[in-house]
Amino acid sequence: MFFCYSCGHQFDKNFQVYRTTECPSCGRDVRVCLNCEFYSPGANYDCHEHISEAVREKDRANFCDYFKLGNKNPNNGKIEEKADKARTAFNDLFKNE
Image (cartoon, rainbow, N blue to C red; front, side, top):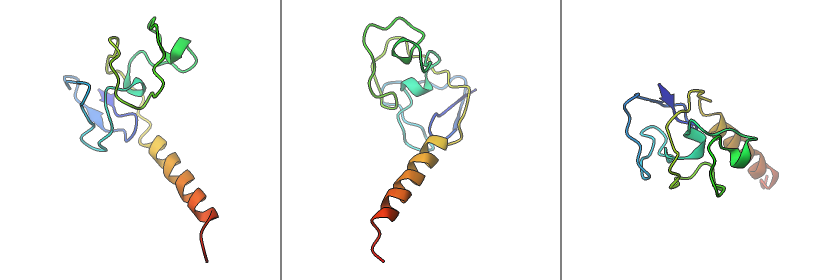
């Protein structure tokens, strides 16, 4: 089973991924580096494959020929939670009371 990097939604092993495929739970792009089997932070271009050009936005759909759905470590939406907490903290700084 595979999971969405953003919300932790579980995909069926036969789930078909195209460039425009979105997660049915959170609506995020599925064909992204963060959902790829070859994604490896710290590796060359953060990828175990020998890609010739870096993919700058790891959370946006791309045309990488090596993409293979493989995120087996769900973070259960921790990325979204961190973004929400940061947004709330920022907004609280400028809150008029």
